[in-house]
Length: 343
Image (cartoon, rainbow, N blue to C red; front, side, top):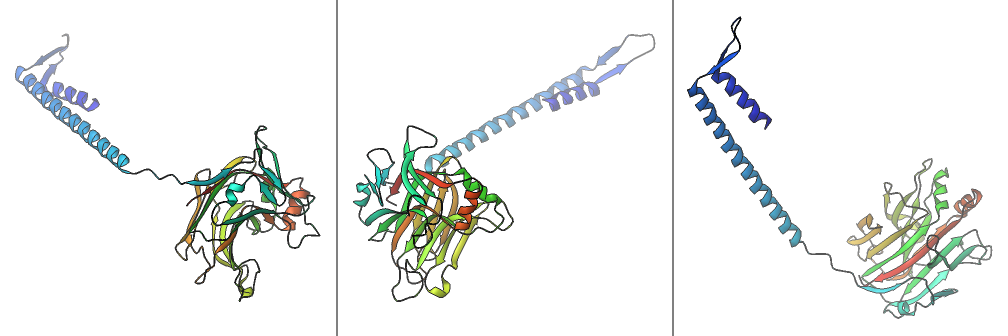
């Protein structure tokens, strides 16, 4: 519009002969032929603008139609079938070392057991408590406070899911509330490379030395670099057999950009597809993809079956547990709304 008005003004000035004489009023004389030409040119511009606007409208309409066709042609993702789901409301209870009321989980083909690995209550706990946010809800509570001198190995909290048949895919999700005191580890000056939150184990190979629990394992845990104050999530696979490679990484992935929330509920989704270099692990928190890794999800070249998964785990060094305790904190987590999927 601004361009059109400017053009009108130029045409009028060029077409008109204006003379100002001393002692006379302003007079403007315009020749008829010039005015006719101005009007003709303006009509041409108007027609051109109308044509351009019509083209623009047609183009926008066409693009909108193409976008709608594109959107409607993408099929929705199929819903994943839930084989088992439960919270911790009554009648679910814990009768150490097992959960009472989860028989439907144990009835699934391939699932042989589900139990807790804890020590005496003064050192680690697995019990049902009131939700820290919603007093009308009950959930699982796990805590580690110290090393039990009567327990072999490092004291931990973990739920251990046992299998007697292999699956192509292991897929589960749950809600979790990590203690806000875990964030105090940001001020720990040393390196953190052992703070396990989820773990999976492949079976032990009897003719090989190394760890008696299995030949390889996968961990999701919290890491921190020396001198840094950034806790971040790590996902890796470790050699556990042979002994010469024990605890060495087969592969490892960090996500230093994502900040794991502490002191609030989040939903964690874990997908594990078996394979050699074509295996896949997808970890989501509140729907956000934290890891999407294609790599070994089997022992390289000679895999065995998965025999145990620890979907809930608080497992770290006594150095870090004591650090949290000494700054007035507690190492604990709440868990709820567990789901196990078909694939």
